[in-house]
Length: 207
Ligand code: SF4
Ligand code: SF4
Image (cartoon, rainbow, N blue to C red):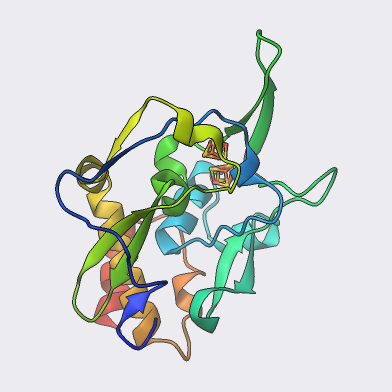
């Protein structure tokens, strides 16, 4: 968090109700491989772990899906641990050769189990914990991303409506992280058998 309370960079864009962009992912897979760094929050761990039928988030670390690494603002955070061979790529990326002979990179996670940052891309959320403000920038997930030439429309308000609960989880996650900066491990190591909202509430009550 910077001195003005923003998680990440303070936003440069307008975030009004008609904010929308043309974009359509071609499934080239570039943003799921190489040197990309995908940091995940508690709810992402919950979603991925449940998808894999794990009963504790610890299994994501032990089985090599996630590792801790220094991320934004100097915090050590969980990120997806990319496989190294034959080239670096996300453990959830699956290549698929279509009948048209084109190789496509597909995420093996169902849409509702994807990390929020992947689900939002190419939108990038900026959040100010002090004021509650949020804004969305359009940032290509990879410099060579061909999605910008697509004909789809991404509407910020619609994404905010659909992803409202998850965006709220992320805001509360960062609030807990900033309050418990000295000992935040409970945010990443927890049972997956319960309801996430209740788990989050119990953390808030105890912090
Ligand atoms: S780089 Fe762009 S087009 Fe390629 S998979 Fe990522 S979002 Fe889709
Ligand atoms: S979780 Fe899915 S969308 Fe996100 S980097 Fe991995 S393969 Fe790509």
